[in-house]
Length: 250
Length: 204
Image (cartoon, rainbow over all chains, first blue to last red; front, side):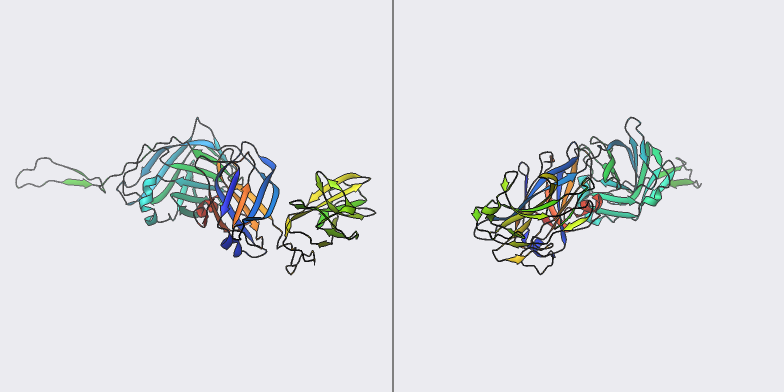
């Protein structure tokens, strides 16, 4: 993007396969929303044919388009990440404990359609293709558990949608837990790259991010090479010819 | 072209349909027939709308009712290749109540044809040369890096590149932009667009 101009190339085969009454989605990722809503402002589209001897602008028109803007997301912070198993490369139960900043209350109105999005550190890249999509993801708020019905993954993102019929009444809260099964990476995390994990709560009805963890989040699990902790208890001295009880606990 | 007057208009007597085009062209010779729009400017029909000189079709009506669609069917005699729009104004005693501008359409040749809405039309069709754009941003949050989508119809002629000029209020995020295309989905959502953002990449 140069200035205010975006030039998209390689459209000939794309538009060539489009039916005369069909629509095609062009998505531009990474544009920064403005400070306030754009009620109506001109976008200028120029269709250019570069295949002829001379480059020709074959169609140019301006259209007043509108873009709505909502408030910035509310702040959250990850206070803990607990794993059922810390060994490298093993499937473990992840539990994120998340809270708001300065005691701000989050409110989910009844019949809300909420999504949870988790972004994993780059070390998960090496095994991303070997990580199975979790069969379930639970969000626990004030003792109530809400299960995601639709879970997908892409490029170190985990997306989970909680059905709108899950929220029968309004919920106010400051902390919550998220639990799901996930494979650990096969190398240690670089805990100096912040944020280590990012967790986002999305409101589908308002098409806005409702709350998001801060960019300085540094909660970082430490993985190890061993699988289980083994504790052995019993007598430290056994006389010859006698027997003694030992307790081995995992 | 169908026009529906807003309820603020109780009645009006005159409907004018202008034909404007880009780039502007020199005067041509016109046939003196009120029901025909020309894509060459007519010396006998000098009228200005803003700074553009326009060819117009003037229709006198006894009364144009509010909220009632008015359908205009006319013939455009092609004269020059270019991008055109139809601009309709409803007025009474030279006071303009309403002005509406159609989607742009493209005329590719100088053969005469009737403006029709069927796909059989060789020059102008509602689903052919006319372009329609739908847009949205995901998510809405203020000063947040977002996915902007443009759903467009096929222009029906060879297009390899598209240039989009966005308002100055919209800028690129610090990580830059990337572009891709996907099958249009009327009620898409942020998660789906995030999942698809690395598929069908386009250079931009």
